[in-house]
Image 1 (cartoon, helix red, strand yellow):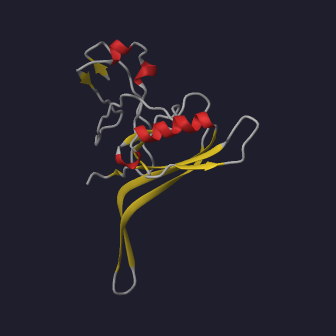
Image 2 (cartoon, rainbow, N blue to C red; image 1 turned 30 degrees about the vertical axis):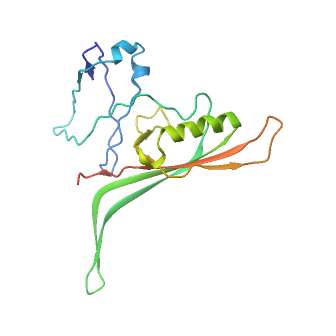
Image 3 (cartoon, rainbow, N blue to C red; image 1 turned 90 degrees about the vertical axis):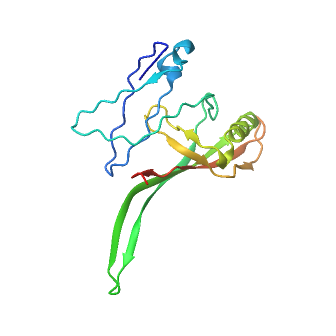
Length: 186
């Protein structure tokens, strides 16, 4: 990837999944290029290379500014991830079922966190700035892995007040994030 301001970076492409549905390529340009003047340009160029005979692209490029983080510092999350695949099931008059994969998949993430009052305030601001379920956003839970979720938050941010501690009130935060369906273009 290059731009008109002198940026030249190699962005690694994650290994294709076994079901041939690609991971989301994501990078933080602020970490790759510390100079903001080099990261700012009106001209961007992307070149793709492939070690196999066929390179298949079905992609969109999105630049997110300003970048919003859940919270700075040590903000550990617990949670779960689910994956839903899509297809068609037909049953004939003899009761035989035929299954046809649509080669599409959607991932969902449920995150929970024990938080202080300061964490809660920062998290509520992040949720409001992301427009909840009505603004596509990027969730990149592990920046060491070149794969993120492009999708939307669920409508509701759940906050549960727990028993106070000697350091002040403690809260349990819970959100759900649903990735846009990816796979075969429709």
